[in-house]
Figure: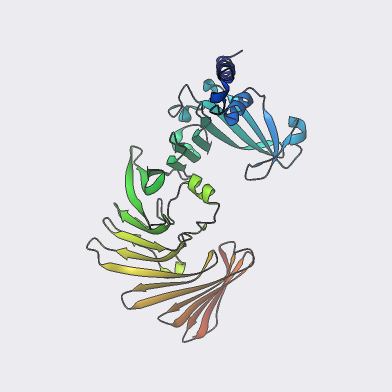
Length: 379
């Protein structure tokens, strides 16, 4: 029997011995005895062999299946197992401690392995690491993520490994379990992480999110590596909220019509939110606290239907419509109230029309992001 199983059995026996000793105390003390059944179950499940589940493409364990053969007959199957230290990949060993137990989950599709997830748990059963990475094993060539958690189960850091070799890191800071800031770092020159910006979270007296203040420490362009496309919230907070407090698109993707968006060192972006965490407006300030531009959003449910950007004497407006599944099917763009562009979405096809003096001057058809035709309809 290997060392891990011997340790687990010893701990379980020790736990039961303590329970037996407690039950022999006087009746007046019996009401103070509490048995942690979840902890006992956690220890006992460690000794089980590989478990198999019918799954979905997200890797959820939908139904436990008795045998590997039957599970792999489903389109998606999930295996859950416990492994020893020498089975952990090198790029995760720096996060490992001897007291951790390591769970590995493998998602299969049509009997082929498509994703592997590693989970380190403390002896109390608290997740301390969650990682899913693909690649030959050298950190710079990996793609996926690593999430690190503190002893209370709150996410402390998350690393993102991109296909182009880029790496980013977000560090979260808490006060009495409440998220107070998140700092975004970019891996540069293969040597060090550079802090790009920090989000500071402001709450009202009822502890609802009131505003987010983002301070930039380097120059960067929206849409490039590390560009701040949305507010950073730990996954565990979002899961706990179950989307009843936060909506999935807390920051809208800036409409293409608004042009390239740049952020500069010492500039500041302030987001005002409602009680559901939806961004009502965002204001960009320069290093002297002068307003550069303001974007105001109008929401309908969990979707933005109107976004207006004001910069100096120019007002850009984008209107949106969605289908029943929440997919965008229509966009209309105006400059200072004058129509300039309309986009209609029909499945994988986008039909773009450009206007001048309220007349269509050009119509372009795009399919899967590739232009397939262009027709000029005016002078």
